Length: 340
Image (cartoon, rainbow, N blue to C red; front, side, top):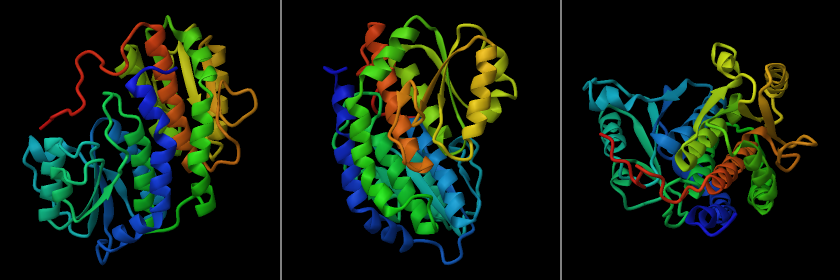
């Protein structure tokens, strides 16, 4: 699929990621330089697609640091005026534009109460950058389509650098260096997402399910489908699906399952069997033979999150075009969302 800003920006992802891979060690060192002397925990601050990158960062950071990591609730600061002591915390703020007022406000408050702040943004001269101790600039180039693509996958890699500053991460440098090539391979295969989109073009709801490290990709894929098509798509953890949502997945409902081949793989397989018994229309994104949305083999689960995110972008774009939607400018949305 081509001819849109969204498609063009998706195709820029291998180059954008390659630049971040090249300076990965530098970014790790820059974060190390501002870490609290005694790290109490890590907190991520974001909204929208950036929040999904933050979910990924939360998993990796807690793995690497052996310290609690979580997501901030910006409204506690901006609406409820709650004052919290962040001494000893590393705060990681993500905003593609660096201009979302509430993210800036929360960072300023966290920093004033003791946090060391890392800003991850595509605009190194943004207000968010000035509110941080250190900036990891994505340098992905201007993104004009409303649905974020290249900035999201760049954020996923940037939060991995933050995690690597905290401790061991579940990938090697050689695996990281191979990532841009794997993303390029996925992007060259637009036939697989188009076939799946043709099967699901008539749907009004869609579930995207993963668990563990790929949960962030499920949330992001669902958001991309919602933004571009108007389909009510929901991203879930495979564990949470069993706690109620499975009751809404009945005959004919599409469900995309993301499997990164890690510890959650058996859970995804079991859930797919359950959904088949309920008559759902399931599809699989994985490196397994016969996957509907195949990804390259021998990619660690953590980096497979980025590949699954790209597959979600492709599916959303194909669905939007088949349904006669303009993916570049979804109704009611703008590139910068100025929540307070």
